[in-house]
Image (cartoon, rainbow, N blue to C red):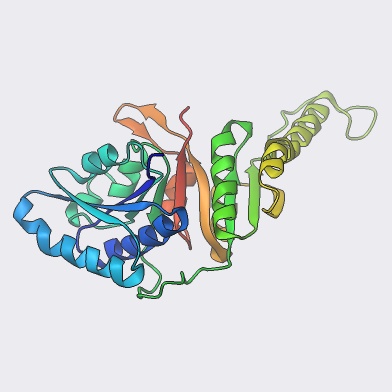
Length: 284
């Protein structure tokens, strides 16, 4: 059986240290190997940073298998390549050289548009320590569900909740459609446009039930709390991240003039989420 592995990008910054700690926790949960990747212009810069990273991981997770990789060149390209076959790739929200992180968007945003497999982006707003028990132990997993097309995203969220032994909270949000002006119906609230809107609303509210039923059968130990809200999904999910250990969403990639890019929900959460964000590829 092929050994699972988790990839993490480091660069010596505090944000990268937080990502390293998270990656070590994720590798331990999966009984996987942790692969620490450092992309640098000059290979001679790498040994001190990598030695420090390995020492920190061993202090936090003594039995964890750790390997290191130095890549000369671009961090996004290096991590995209390293993510091939990985159970998870982990990065921080900033880092990889400051200027690089702000040029044409952060490294995490650009990586999310190209990475193979799930990507965890760790925001740098929680304390760093050497404790083996994660600070968010016991908190639920949050799933942002946009529709039946997010089957892989939902499956990952169930697995994540099962690994952590916590509840899965599912938030399905959509914008209420506008009804075009029309002649009034003789029967209140039964005009053709209103009936179409009501049918749409019922269909949208049913999405979580149909999408989650089979997954609940496959993961009977995972408790599920699903709700549907009307309004912008980015705002609703952002508020819900305050009490979650991690939020899982689909990385809906859209191809534009400058290449693949992410939607509003991913951008909002990567910049403002209160917890780490896991993006599961969901190409459109």
